[in-house]
Length: 518
Image (tube, rainbow, N blue to C red; front, top):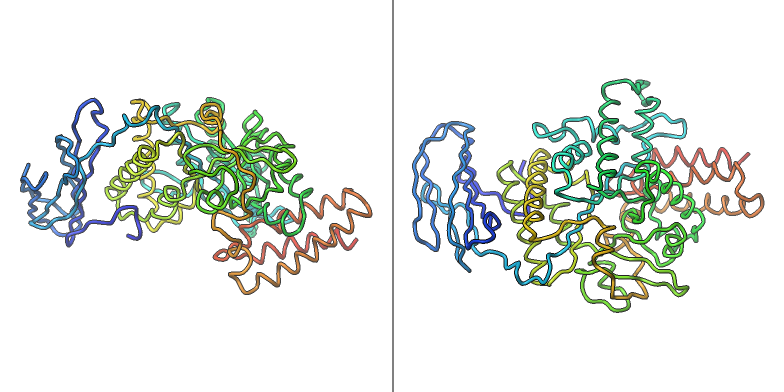
């Protein structure tokens, strides 16, 4: 079950153990709370646990641990720079922690933290409205995170409902995901195996419950909901390579309408699928009333042109026509820490990981005098695709509870993006941001699979047919149906190398051809 985690797993034969330092327990005192977590996976055994501070023995205990039994020990010790707390089990050094406290007083004002999660599933229905896959629903109702919760989408909602206004997050609940949730809750769906899932079924009711919680969270301003292009289209690539600005704009409008109807307000922020950006998107977004988006510090900011400093503040990019867009550049390292270093062996390993993540975030804020720090990543995949999904629920729960405490203590300020735009005015101006993605290239969607080029050539033929038809007949009913098919053909999830899905692409190519050949 173990894999790459933010912190290394600590085992001594069948004993797992960690020492976790909480420097925020008493911020007014020079004191650190230490927690020791010990679990025995083997036969019943006598265990000696020793705690050393700066190589001085503070405590030594002997107890018997039964199979599967765990224990938690707590200590309060003086904070000391460059001093280690050491956990020694049966005479072997198992884990360590540094006892210094982050010097948050070095910040003039608390750093603003923007946490963005991207909830998305591609259209999993075919042109006949039959669902070939059920991932929009499985990640709600399947107990992926048992015993801590059901699917990631449901767990996010329930967790934030529990914490209420004490923590504020930003969510892109993609329009295609919302549409599919509405499909099952309003009229039910039919699956490829001819199964009917009625809108009155217990499964559909669970989807409705999840929908309603997100709506309530948005209404109560606990979360901000971004809009997005309808399908998961790599918009920057399409406008750069195929001059599809009109199609991209209409698909963005379609997604914007779904988002507005969902939350009841006009979203001001947009999530660009795969962070696929082009300067050609700036006037399109401006024309739709979009004020800001989220890009990558490593691949977008570092190669941008203009007044480039670092990603700990807001930027404004302006094109040659004077159109402006505010940019949140995510901290790539911290975002990847959650997104990819999430294979925790156990709940206690995940707790250690959550504390390590928060301390790393706080230290980045202090060392860089950050006005703003943005973390942005998939909302579901880091949990569901982990080698040990339930541990990610513990990581997330622990992280959110620490954020709540830090926020209430005034050590940081967790804000939504719309609040950050008001509180942190962008003063640095950019004149160009490179056309790329969060991966730094488009190879995942064109290049890593042998058949990619063959299918892109087929798509290019359809784009040409579409443009020829529209130039002769305008955007009539046939053209709209061809365009609807193109939106689905170009969904980036179908093209992603590891999940290459030519079945869905072929279904929608056939749908396009049905109208193009009339």
